[in-house]
Amino acid sequence: MITCGMNHLGLAVADLHASCKFFTELLGWSVSGSDESYLRMPVSDGSPMHMMCYDSSGIGIEFFWPGV
Image 1: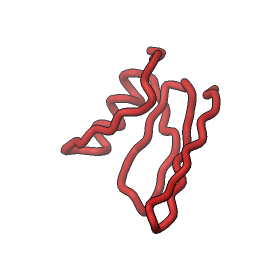
Image 2: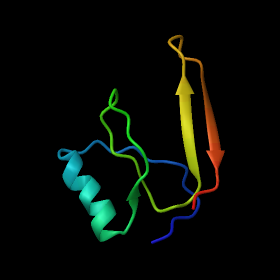
Image 3: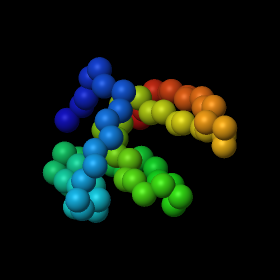
């Protein structure tokens, strides 16, 4: 399943690992990164990727690049 036209979507779920399993095993996506300080399971279908960087004042920058 290839997406088109969506940047990102955050979902609040009851079971993070079951939700990740749905996207990776059923839809064929892959885990695209993790951050031990922020509980999340980012998944991607290989479309364009991005990275967000913030400092303690809240100022941030986002980088976007083509996926695989």
